[in-house]
Length: 561
Image (cartoon, rainbow, N blue to C red):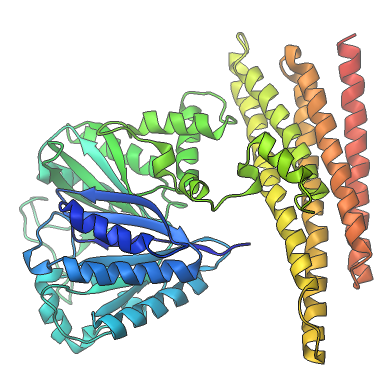
């Protein structure tokens, strides 16, 4: 699998388009670094640029961007709403595909070292790349901002990780790190009051607000034995937030960074902000995403709001995104275009795509070409995915059938099960081709010495095992969707009973095809015990699938006589 990382540097310039464009051009000048998004903010005087690709070109593009920003941005003249301490303020790397967080952190350290040594900029490492626990939190690293940077650099405890401990008035310092996907998310309020926006921000952010004696707003701040403010935590973990006024739109916003979207997803932050704003006499009018958003965040939001409406959540990604955009008010300030804001869509547009992203015609023509992959394994996964899709379709038709309103949740659950299988099978379309390519690469390894021959044999055996395991996964996944199409044939919308039957046929065809791919690779595996175990498991799955197919077809044939 190709290693893909994302880089999301924040530059302290959001008003001068010439400067922004020159920095973007420095990134684009590196072949293989795919520029995905440029998001300038006038009030914050800050631009977020997102690009992605294989590690080597991304690191080179990041270095060139930092160098260009150093040349063009004068921090001594910078003013803006957002916290900052450098021309390139923060530069995080994010693992996207085929690379671990540990590997990404090592890349961030290498990049930070190069910036410090070649550009003589003070570099602080943060998040997963941090040199010590005390520097993990970006807010701690950037505390004091640009105005306090000279004193910070003079403090031995805050010696930079790389580069000189010297204050550069034009350039400031830079924080380089590795982190998970972070969503920069602003929630719009029907007020112009920064103080009231801050009140909502303190209500929801993990850090909360300082505890005070007497009056919660004007009272004396309570401090601990070390003199630090005692904090009253907010309601949401992994959320950083402040309130500010955006003159460009004439509104106050709660500006959030969502640092762990698995535990605290986008829609929960929106709903909590709505609740806290209403309690304070305000209303949320919408929201905006700064930079890019992972597809999964919008899909989860769409499902959440459909569940609130008691509607089936087993619908297409496009429909889930439409529901999410409307429900979160992402069109409030300007049109939200998923093709420009969803990272997976932009990667696809830049040519970092998958077989499953091809059109039907494109996939069939690629299969028909003289290239040996995609082959039978990918096609088997595709057939099974088509069967799961038919199960989803019947479940959704049944959930919305007039007169069956009380059964919406039952069918929504069936649709969800089918969609989970469908998505896994779509992934396996590409994984089967990757497994084949990996096997071919292993066979091409040199074998001129005993050491090379041993390494080649080990690589071949690992690739052969993976080439058996992938079609076995296709079989397992396809088998999980058979109960769905059986239930839809027996209890779903009777007008779609034949669709359920075709779904069963497609699933079992995919399972049988995948079984053949398991068998053909088994003879090359030297671990005969492991091969026999996989073959027994595959044989049992096909046997059970055949029984399901027989039962479903018998039921359907009787019903449509």
